[in-house]
Image (cartoon, rainbow, N blue to C red; front, side, top):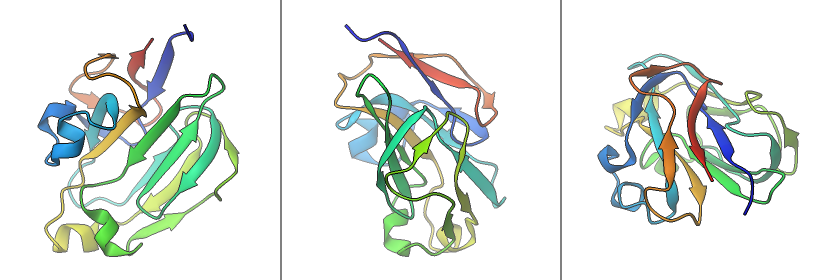
Length: 152
């Protein structure tokens, strides 16, 4: 059994249970257990890595970091933001890079996403984990880099 994994908030904002995320895949925990964070409305923000590890997937709106024990942690910034084709997202690292927890990954200007009516609620999940296996470590407001949930 891998040791307990502590996943940190990738952005500052309000902690949102996955069940309240306006996307059935994340709300149903089909990709994994975790939590979500909603950034302050309309503010430009940075997204940091929720764990230390290797960036195995990097898209304008989402990324996966595999931590040393081999678990992949997905950070998905906003809902339906893939449709923006990168508008408002500036990547600060490259796929294949090794990052530390709390290291900046992208800079986000949510103007285009909000104009399109997309939610900026950002799910953070440990891939391929059973529903409700994450233990919340933060409620209410959270600061980027602070512990969000643990797993294991």
